[in-house]
Length: 324
Ligand code: PCA
Image (cartoon, rainbow, N blue to C red; front, side, top):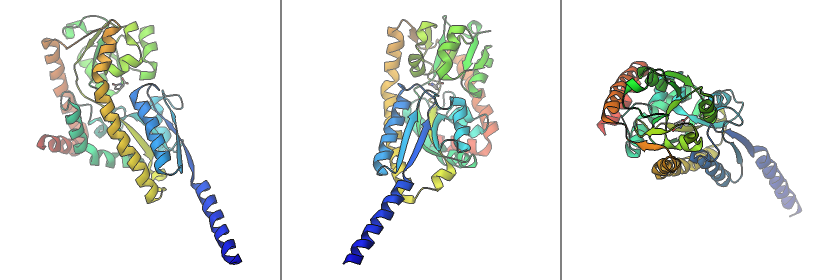
């Protein structure tokens, strides 16, 4: 009996020390404002992970580019400076064109179609991310993308020479096609760029315009709804592969639930953001027919360019999307 007690005490001690050793603290840099729904959902995810792993993984969210700037987050994860983080997926399309799958103008402009496109793209995107030493846990769409200006714009005649804040190579191309001068600026630094005149227009959702209070500098928002780009929460591949199957399943469950909740939140907020822009004095309207026709022509060219860069995999994604 005595021996048994001793043995069981020893087993308990080992179990305790094993769980103490396996309890991991993960810092999770995120690129966008702490009050933005993406970042709030990052905190929901962290809470779920803590819950479903029984405290084995304890994630601390660092929003707003505070730990690593938006443009540095992917590399920080790839090189194991942090195990996990979040970023805008198509910002990485310069390195891996396939990751621009969600940046194709006027291809999938509702949440439903955007989800359909993601289902068509998912396996290929995950293969691509694996080559980059990353594993995506969940993705979440921004509301539709439209144009912010500080004057009325009826066609490209009105956009020539404007300094345009872009967030990836595709939006820089869009700007150039409209005769504008692109400059890449992080969302976290957007208010400052507008205040100092580094940028005087940009493309984004109502969400980022609201977060950055752009009505302090700009006057017009055109609801083009060109695409719904996604953020993704990614983890370093070795870190992921080092987890037990049970822990992976717990983290993935947290990720699946958070991804679905985040997407629903985005849809729920889309019009609310427009109301906030409008309540703060901006003119929020649909682009005029002439401007829209120009944007659609540029969009078709951008999709053709993407297909050239993304090759057969890109074509397969669009084919699968169109077949459904
Ligand atoms: N907001 C982010 C990306 C897309 C969006 O709606 C930004 O403007 O940087």
